[in-house]
Every structure is written in structure tokens, then in C-alpha cells.
Image 1 (cartoon, rainbow, N blue to C red):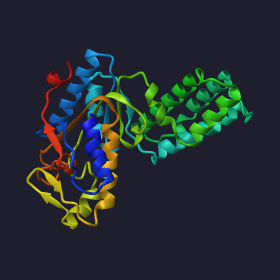
Image 2 (cartoon, one colour; image 1 turned 90 degrees about the vertical axis):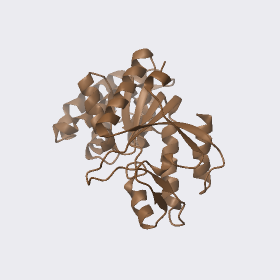
Image 3 (cartoon, one colour; image 1 turned 90 degrees about the horizontal axis):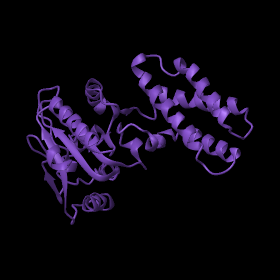
Image 4 (cartoon, helix red, strand yellow; image 1 turned 135 degrees about the horizontal axis):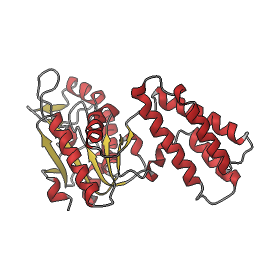
Length: 304
């Protein structure tokens, strides 16, 4: 993990091939279904053999939807945070939570435990204002749970009720509830890499290591147009075109955040099946970077 950290960090610091080396776990599957099944198999292995927690981190929320479906079918409990900070439901939740927090405390500048319970009840009563489609209720459910966890954790804080009020008001005002995922009891978390900043789990799985998925199309499209990559049948290699430095450094920074969320180990998956236009999907240029040695793995070999 330290060697991998060093390689990825070096790419972020200098726009050039790294002089360092490291191995990285990458499982290549044949299609989307195989990839999802493999990921769920790994999750079962991890949580079945230990008290360790595992996070599935995706570049964009929609990349984790089919994994969530398979987990639900398997009866595996998980925390679903596959939503964006710009989603209507996310923003509406904060609007209502802040409003009801101030109402419950009467803007007194103090937060007593009975005030926090009143706030939760008021937010619950207004949940229909937060989502219009039942398919989006999961955003409310996740945010409400994080609010509950925040209030529960606040009981352990040192200081006065005034200090508690100020801390809670700051967290809600800065839209910082996702940081409470650290205290979620569920052993499986599905979330975006962006939302995982500052958090850690024993194991991290990063799926969809494909061109146009990770890196996103915001890099891959201009990169192809600029001829800044060498394309093979099922892989893509970045060639450091002069116009791509900003986009590349942004993606490598996101990649660095993802791999450094793992305390014990990080696992990548990719599938090179056909896309919607009938072409083979390509492995991400991020796993084809110089200095990275790709290691195939099975869960039986890795998770003892």
C-alpha cells in the first residue's frame, strides 16, 4: 500500500511517468454481470470472515446502482450513499434539517438532547418535501441516518450545550453529514470517491476501471481528440499530451483519494465486455501507467 501510494502521488506531483514501482490488485472480468457478481462475492467473503468494513467507491454514483441491486437481492445490509452533493434531495434535506434544528433549539444557541430528538421528529414529518419519487427515497434515508448518527455522537462530545449547538450548526451549514459515515454500523458502504474523502475502511473495492468511467468522459473525450493516448483493443495508455495536464492531474488526484481510503488493502475490477455500441470496453489508462504491475487475484487468495 505504501509503494502504491508513492507511485500515484508521484504522478500527481509531476506530469511524467513515475520512477517508482508498485503492484496493484486488478481483476479483469468479461462483462458487467460478471464484474458485479465478483464484487458481491468479495464483499461476502470480507464481512463473513471478520468484523472488517468494506467500501465500494465509484467515480460516479450511477456506476454502483447494479451492485446495490445485487447486494439487496442477496440480503446483504449496506449503506447507500450513491448520490451527489448537487442532487435536489441532498440540498433539500439540508434546508429542512437546518430549519428544524433552529426551530427545535429556538435559536437559543444551545442544543439539549430533547431538542435534537424534536429536530429528528420534525425532519421525519417533512420527508415528503425532500423527495418526489420513491426511487429517490434512499437519499433521504441515508441523510436521515447520518443526522441520527451526528446527534448520537454529539452526546460524547466534551463541552457545553452551547458548544454542541455551534458544532452541529457548522456541520449542517457546511453540508458535512457525509463525514458521519465513519460511525455507520453497517459493514458495507457504497459511495462515491468524492464523498469518501477523510474516511477509511479496512478494505476498499474500486470497480469500473474503464476508459470513460474512470477516468471520466471529461478527460477521455478531449484526450482522444488530442491524440494523447494509445488505444489498444481493450486497453488505453496515456501519452501525456501537452493539453491534458490539468485533466489528468484531476483524475489521478481522485484515484489517489480512492486507494488511500483502505487501511489493509484495495481491490480494483474492470470488465472488457461490449459497450452499448457493440465495441469492447477498454481498461483505464490509470491502471496502465508506467510503474504499476497488475496482479490478478481471487478472493480466496486475498481474504483469509
